Image (cartoon, rainbow over all chains, first blue to last red; front, top):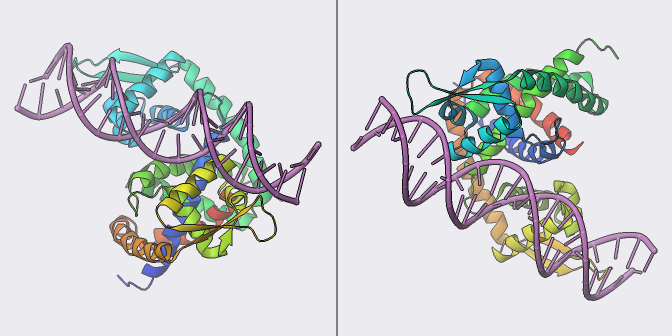
Length: 145
Length: 145
DNA sequence: TATTGTTATACTCTATAACTATA
DNA sequence: TATAGTTATAGAGTATAACAATA
């Protein structure tokens, strides 16, 4: 493995870090769904993919501490977006799954996201979009590393 | 401009958003410099590039409200990393610039960042790194759009 | 004893509103 | 009047520590 690109990687990591923090701050405010925090949104996305999960599993997947996930799940339940059921085999655990309301809401948020996307599209050319599309799965992998 | 890629862009934005929020949370904790928040770090980076700036300019560049920047600058000053001087032409404004301590600290943080980078390098192959390097400037542009 | 989830509490970062000083 | 910066205050989101119930 050649180490030539190490310096370039360092520069890239530098740029990524500042861009990620800045984008994170801005995304917090440009929410596609008012009244739904980024992490709540992310949990719903995870449930849409996985079907259902225990609070502990969700905490691990979102890289959040268990007490934080307790709060997030409680908020989602209060909004009618998830359902909590007893675990069939282990009475300590619970099973969290999304409701039909959540599915409808995710569809609606997809629509709103496209509006925001149109704004961004004006600022980036096709070549830049191609780079973003290529990097998106890598960033996801990186986030979960 | 063909609209064929719009759906793909939406998917990419989706992935980017969740990756950005997740990475943001993790970066908050995996700080290259203990006792220096991501935004404080970012401000130092900006000052390193621009030489000096007023609190208002910094707030605009970091997309933070003026009172937040007041606090950040005060924290950096307390740590001896920036210097505040009166503006030569406008007595309402101030000029913020980095100290020699800050430069030394940035160098030290660069060293620590490479340690973290080595960890990441194990998880990504060269092709993935190439995609990240290509996307890094686009993400920065996006963050400032 | 170890593990899952919760409660209680505190901290960090940022925002909004109201104020001061200068232009 | 308008602008730069500050002070005071509040809110969102997360963490740690201590606890309950179950394994």
